[in-house]
Structures are given as C-alpha cells and as structure tokens.
Length: 212
Image (cartoon, rainbow, N blue to C red; front, top):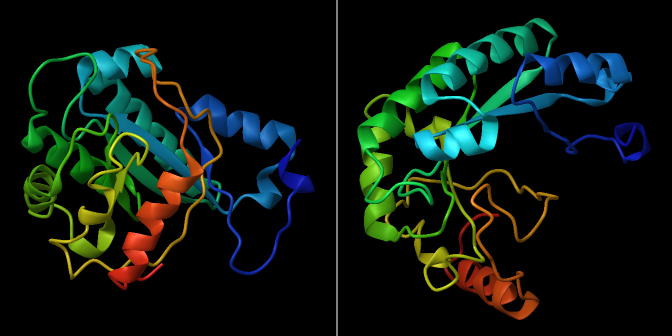
C-alpha cells in the first residue's frame, strides 16, 4: 500500500477519494486506515457526467454518497464533499441549474460532510457565473463551509479572478492533487498544464495577497 510509505506528521493530510462504500471496505482491508484522517465524496450536477463517471444517475449517486458518508463517520473519518460541473457539463448543452447545485451541496452537508467544494470542472466559469452559483448555494450552506475550485489549465485567463468577488473567503488549506492531467470522462483533449502559465496564475494570486 502507498499510504504507509508517505510522510506523516502534524499538518499533513492525505484525503482519499471514496466514491462508494466499497472504497471504504478496500481501505479497511488494505490496512491503510491508521494512515487516513479524511476521505472525500463527490457528486456531479449533470446527469450525463454522473453516468459517465460513476455509472449512475444523480439520484442514485446521492443515495450512495449518504451511505458512504455514514460509514466513513462510523469509521472515525472526517468527510468532505465536492459538487462538480457547477457551471456547465461536457455532456449537456447550456448552463447548469444552480438550484440543483445548491440542493446537492445541502444534501452533502446534511449527510455529514464538514465542507463542500464547488468545482468548475470544464473551466467555462467566469467571476460572474461562479458568483451566481456561490450566492445560490449560500442560501443553504454557510460561506465558511464552502470552497470554490477551478481547473486552472482550462481557466488560466480568469483563474486568479475567481475569488475577486469574495473578500469574505479566506483560503485556509493548501491542496495538491495527484491525478492524470489530461483526462475527463468525456475523453476530451486537454492541454497539459504548462509550468510557466501555472506560475503566472500563482503570482497573480500572491500580488492580490490572497491567503495560501
């Protein structure tokens, strides 16, 4: 198992993606549980994306999520959630229903997640569209329980601007994600992340004095 080989100490956390109860069983059976403090569950505000990514409908996915969160909490793990496709989906035309995003985030919090991230999965968001979704979700989930994420290889021109309308948001967690850099369920072709352009986005954040 990988987790026992990783450095562990105060301030280090390795959240594990758990799309269903079986994933939690795999954690327990692998002997990795002593090295895990937190898991995360995810939903997609898109029927097409949900079926392509997890082979189930939104309704079925929400049921799986609730069961997964319940078991994770019983195992002594913290759980955070994520709702993807909050602005648009590679499988459906038009803009995602922000009320659907709100209701999904609310259900994740009610299930026991301590935080919910809102993800602009395909990178079509702008400060205005992100603001609209966040303001809608905030009717059901407190600001301090929300996070906003965007795939910066898709949204490099606006990535540093997305937090602009939210001086009340304070970034308190630095997160690194190890994953494939050019894959989505739609198998669309994504350009690799370029170091120089990523560095430019980070420098713009620093100049705005965002917490990191």
